[in-house]
Image (cartoon, rainbow over all chains, first blue to last red; front, side):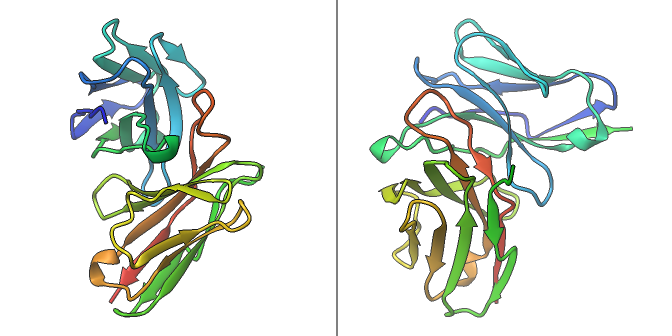
Length: 113
Length: 116
């Protein structure tokens, strides 16, 4: 399984953009990059995913480098409710083709007022 | 619509007791996953079902852990003879189909198990 590396923690001012980096240098050509976040005492929440191209949805933007060895999740206008642990995941295939998610320790993002 | 639900939300068990944790996935979701999350760690995969078939149980830590999904909908994770190291949050997730395209997994709120 391709592994990911993320900084353990980051801070961001409310209203500013939060840019969360992730390294995945061993990613395979058919593996997607997924981002989830986990707010305290809740289950993880899907944010966005991509394969090669940059992606944007109502929550965030995902920028993937051309060599696919790293990516950045961008929250354009962070709010206090965006304080959470953010996980960058390269989707793995296990036995029987299961698309299990392999979580690391993630980045603890704190949005400050 | 309704999301993934899990019950109970909290469970305290004495060491050696058996516990059963329930997961109700989103209606129509083919794939169901169980994860274990220790305090301060990311979730770790336990097992995966496609409909009623358990296709991957490589993450189950011991033979005390057993999961089933007999009718391809509700799933139960059973832990026999609980040990203190089993204390964790147990998360259930479902997705439309794990084989086609790239479907995201929707997680429930988890069951916090404390073994005393």
